[in-house]
Image (cartoon, rainbow, N blue to C red; front, side, top):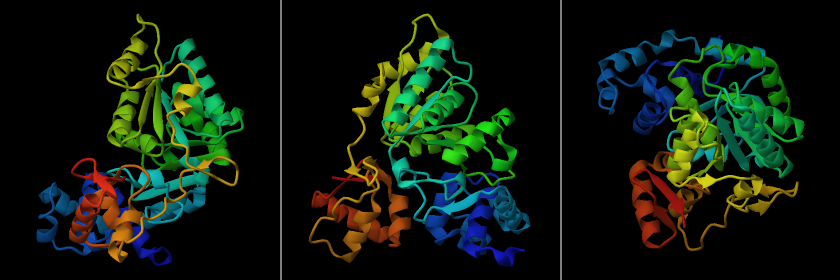
Length: 370
């Protein structure tokens, strides 16, 4: 019954179930109407004023009450998946900072503060012996260094990286393209259980949703968004791993690539990344030296969730806007949502802070602390 679930959670899940409403359009709708519940209360003519919302999407939003969001939440409970909203304390801070963060995560396992120090390892689904060896060695060494390994639970390099991190006694996060109850590939069910026991398996898809072709590239932005940097190990020039590296670059995160034999098809993508400015990786030190130091956590590892001191002489609105900007490039939409301040005041406050050299604009939609 819908009465047993928080209306805001139900609305967010239902909005995520509307076909054609991806993270970008969801962000525009919420910016216009305030929250997901208000989107469904909006009149058709108001919805149509939002950029990208045409008559077909207006009709889908109007018919969204027929989508069984409560059933998806019930299924999540039965399979042990927690619902993590973007405004909650357990939502990964680094992910909140990307331009199009998922509003809802379904998580099996636990996201911990030390996962802020994460690196993604991605690559071919059909790696060579060399590629498997490199992925295993890098994931093992990162785990030994206290770095969480992030990947997509896919066949090939992803699976090698997850297993190596687990065998090294480290933490690993796996990001799915579909829902937990429609795990893909199905033969990785045991691996998913192992990851959940020593890390977390998460997805923005409701548990009963199958992985669709378009959800794999969309999933890749979460892999890079959770990570300080992404390492590509073997990728052809059309590999999906290159989408992850593209997202990483757009999110202001580090991009790393492992070189390979010049006559190997699976080296082409990595070599192109290196030519475009990605850091060439020969061993784990090449990765670790690019990671920000952070503050020491109780476990002796850097805690990148530790907030920077707020500059003095800020008024209340300036302080809230500044503190809503994360440690890396942050979307203006995210600043609006986190601070709870209207968009026009956020924009004017950012301009004031920019003049005072407290923050800087990276692009039209991204801002960062100085």
